[in-house]
Image (cartoon, rainbow, N blue to C red; front, side, top):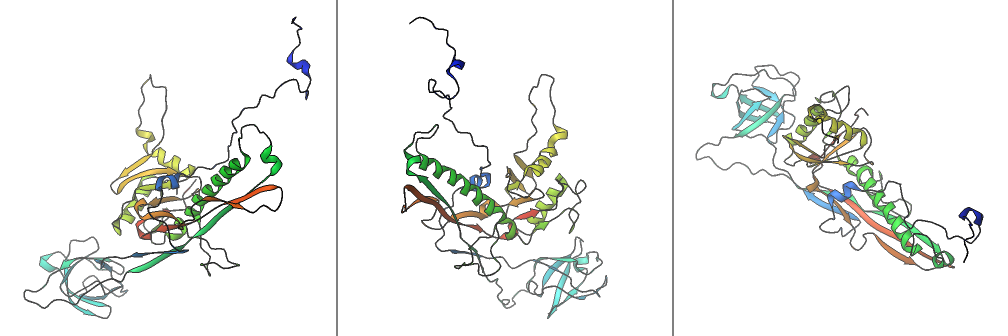
Length: 383
């Protein structure tokens, strides 16, 4: 055939002479990553009821505090906030002093002590001063002391249903499409991404209803997330003895103070720090001043993925679902995201009422967060 010189632009727009050049790859830019769920991994066992419960216990405490506005420096009797941790014969240390006192009497909420035990220098007592029990000194040949114990407590969280519908017309399913072999399968994948995204968001920020948490025909059953579950260790810059930070922003001194506060009253180890973009940049800046580069270096690195302190080695996870002014400090060994048995995410076909393929992607999950005082939340940070 002789060369005609006809160009592609001569075909005219919309004419069927040319095959469309459309890539078979569909680009999705919407955020759908789930870094915290990926870090925690699958639970070892499922929940067996919509009310998931677990049992927690604690040792008899070995600390207390003076609760007496009239106490003076040299008093030998004073009220305490809780008398139950103390026994006659306990050696106790007030505050951070070197004095040791021995308990000689206990009455209702009052301790009687002998000051300067073992010729230790007497401290100046004050209201709200902490008391640390070093141990009990029993008399030789004495009868066994009264038994002491703690009561185990039952904690719970509720499962929450996550679902999204899929509906594709018969014509759409039968038509050939760019980048998609099966429209129903594609819609399943998209809805699954959305539900996993929502599950991670709920694990972090979820809140159970104030009443009727078990759910009803009018009350939706929702779970408490991490932020709402932490009650003991909630910190803010310049509040409750915390450092102010750099003008209220996160710095290493503030983060370490929060980690120490959790460590002081928990045997757990913070191994996971979760934060959003603003606070991740603040953590990255901890090491910025100490980085060195050679003239031939062509790559600039400014990222901290693991933070190691005296109070644990923690992986730093960037999650866009954490509020911008917060940092979560977690012991991942005490966290689990559990599906209700047989209710992990799956596709459920529904009866068609017309010329379409219908179904729903559905799953039911809850958060198991053991020992909330083993975790912490820093909030009110500058962004």
